[in-house]
Amino acid sequence: MYLEKRNYVKPWEHKGDDNFEVTVSQHGEPVSHIKPKRVSYVNEEVGYWRKANHIHNWFVENVQDGKDNCGDYWVSKEDLEKLLDLCKQIIEDPSKAEELLPTRSGFFFGGTEYDEYYMNSIEHTINILEETLSEVDERGYLHGEIYYSSSW
Image: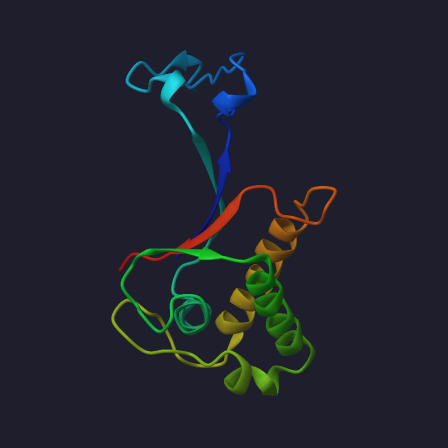
């Protein structure tokens, strides 16, 4: 399960900014199969989970319109704030876990108990979301676009 930030880096041609340069290297050496002039986005992995089926279930129900198809789905700042609020409510009162972020069974989905692993993944999610939400511009907009995806 991944949360990715996609940053548009290529300047708009109509603004006349041809001072555009992207450098791609790996282990200090240029990556020859990537053409820098064709790079439009730089993607960052801002979140990663394993077997946090309750978090995945929330994304399926609230972002993916109920479709669990391993696609890439745009996530709004408001969606991230809603999930963060739910996670914080669960930390304050773990008895609300089943009501607010229910587990989901399935192949590769991990356990369905509201146990220490569940609570650790809630704390992990809070860390991911707080860091992601801290990256806003002067107008309060997130830098880049956020996407959720999963792969089973």
